[in-house]
Image (spheres, rainbow, N blue to C red):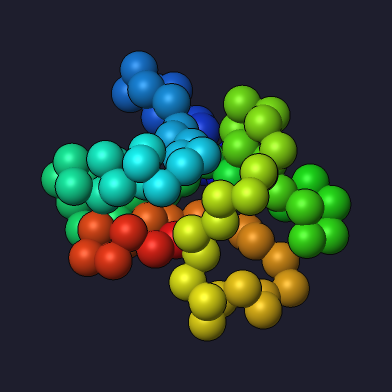
Length: 84
């Protein structure tokens, strides 16, 4: 996520967090590229936070096939599915 934060700051932006299905759907349908990096990181084992420090709530839109991964190095949302 450090790369994503740095890239966004250099381009006068910030990394994105989506904390509800409504926000996620909005972003999905307004994406210009096929995917976008989201600002999330693992803070403890199986505990994640957004770049602004907000801990993940109950909304988790990760692809069910990826949820078994041991660590989360980066988070990408795909336009076609809206999954992370």
